[in-house]
Image: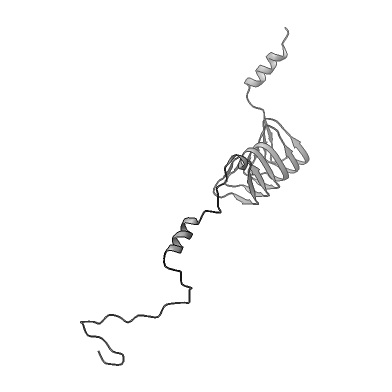
Length: 173
């Protein structure tokens, strides 16, 4: 019986996406490349690269690496920069210390992110004109009464008379 490469390829495609799991007992140093999905629960120092893959950094993971992938989900700790072309999710237990670039960023309550973020969608979004942002307030303010400089509290004004009689200073009421 002869099985063609096309039949084998179709069977592999039907079996679903390839998932690789690295348990909490694993430690790596260097560059890791993958396709499909990589679930990392151990320790890794170096670089993680994937053109089309999804990286899931588990609760027990400690990663000191620069990461480039299509989609990244962080539940553990990451010390390094992340480029997630499609989406980056920081789940409640996540701790990320580094700069991120992504198409979409989701930060769940409880997650910690220390760094700067940059959207990969920024070239597709029209930036608003901020120079004229306060023109309405500025023009309304100039037409109204001129602003007085703040000098502290204004002096107290005398109270109106009680019962129609003016109250003089120093006289008994």
